Image (tube, rainbow over all chains, first blue to last red):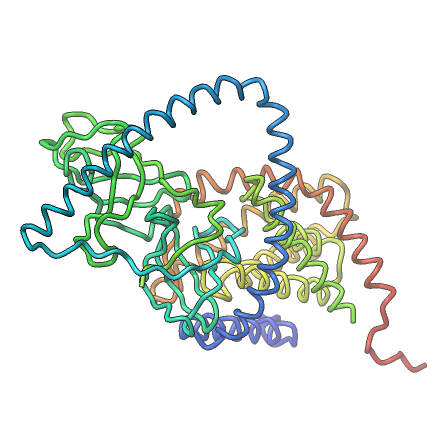
Length: 266
Length: 176
């Protein structure tokens, strides 16, 4: 008991009180400017280092995968041909759709107004799935704003805003819940992050048909995310017919851990 | 001046963690936690406390969790380890003690973080973390990687300490 009367105890107690005060200051957003400066310096350093690391990693992995390249090239060429055909078909459908909408006097589907942003920092601690972007309050970035990778692949949403930077929580973080819709069957469910391991699609009723490879988009139900942003594709079904709801694993469409140039939907 | 050397050294470690280890998908490794664990054995209380606070604040700034939580968790780890190693165990450090300190420091850090996170979560100042995921997936990986990286960090620690010891301090000379 005598320890609590010592100078060391008083010092440690003061540090804890100051740290608790720091938590409150951060929650209220009073240390935004300090963090902005730190993000710039640290972001600059990690960007340079990670580009060097990635290029070394790529050259090493190329050496190991050189045998597979011929096969992969043939496969990709085939895919390109198929996609070119599909693209042409879709373009013609789009033209037809536009003409029909005009004829029926429908409102043209609004395109998103995008603000380009750059990733400064990826959270290296692993406690949360967050990134820091280089635009903040001064660039009209606000809380809850969706962040996408071109051309509409959902990456996350803004959860903290500072004057010149903002924190984005990735869709793989379990705190982000999205109303999703399966494109092929129009089945609706909730998408939740699985700590960077992927996403889970849950609460899909048993009468809906979902299968591996189906694409999942935002349904626009919750108003958090506009409708039509691509979340990913179903990689595996993980429920049986006896379950109340269907569950599935979803692979994110965007490369979340290497996302550098992104867009904020205004 | 010594504290500035340590601040720079810790910042370089954080840069290595974010710029080299993260692109190599070695996310669970925590170099600053290793330094804090080593500081409990190899530094005096005051120096260890400063290293813990500086490292914790740097990590807090780059993490998505509210600022202060990681520093508090590291401080708890440092105080517990210091109590066990200096007050109860009080033996000359050897390899086994170093390895055990890093491993137990990592485990303690996760538990301390979860406790602090849940406490601040009650008053809505922190997002409550997924306990099951952190303890079943993240923690074993973190222990493994921290043990692997403890030797290079140990060398780095000595390099920094020898550099810092050459720097002048502002302490008053003892008058005889």
